[in-house]
Length: 203
Image 1 (cartoon, rainbow, N blue to C red):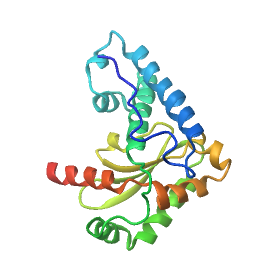
Image 2: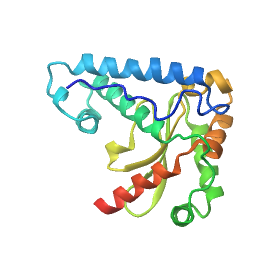
Image 3: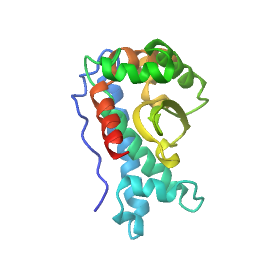
Image 4: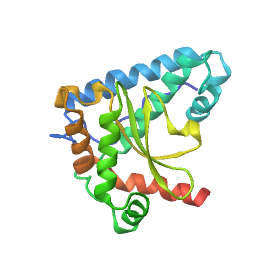
């Protein structure tokens, strides 16, 4: 079965003014679609065509022979996950129960937000910043290009896309402003907490 481009979980203008409809048209409709289409082209007639996306990512991670498949599979997964991490009228601090987990791991929500922004600013070139878990502690992970914490056995809870196409139309070179708006206004904590609770049940 071919991999498919999932629809956005919100209207294209729902995240304005923090993320414009134009950005989403290009980011989702062109960049994400291209990764999906290229992945289907690359896996056609191979064993990977019968795997789910996470299996493809884990099977091809670190393989020079399958680098293109990994890049397109991971970018397909990363973007789908990113859209679910966004929601209108969201952002800010999570509920008290999950806020305690953040406090236990980072000291406070403010320290978490500062560390997340610093990781985004320090990522040279293209990549992603993640809130992930491996065991009991939450951690912030920065990955290059299509990198994904799944390949290190971590569970992804939240991500912010820091490729330029994610923010350049709205923020130009001001990546820090984009990440600040993401944390303050767009983070879908309900989705983040669902990932955390699912991981806890599976542990």
